[in-house]
Length: 112
Image 1: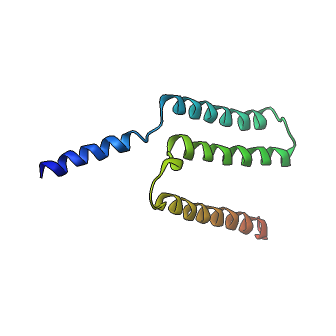
Image 2: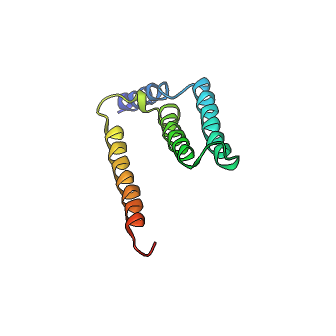
Image 3: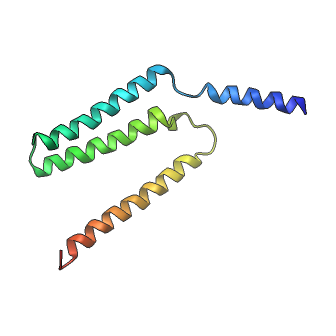
């Protein structure tokens, strides 16, 4: 029984080694700040037209999502079956369907 307990600690130490370094966290934090400031300034200061502003918002949102996954959720370091990735993809599909469906309903609503 003591052997299993020691093996558990060894596994925990092995898992802890896969977490990001301080450098990765600082880079991720810096990118997150930049990707937050850009759309705020684009909207508040009116840098672009309506369509270009929407493109900037969507692009920075996607990049922000990628930064969160890679730098903070360590998705690229996952070993073995990619259950987290599959769950994430399913979640994204659901979100896209809900958002697109909501926009479609609002666009085709006669009262709106």
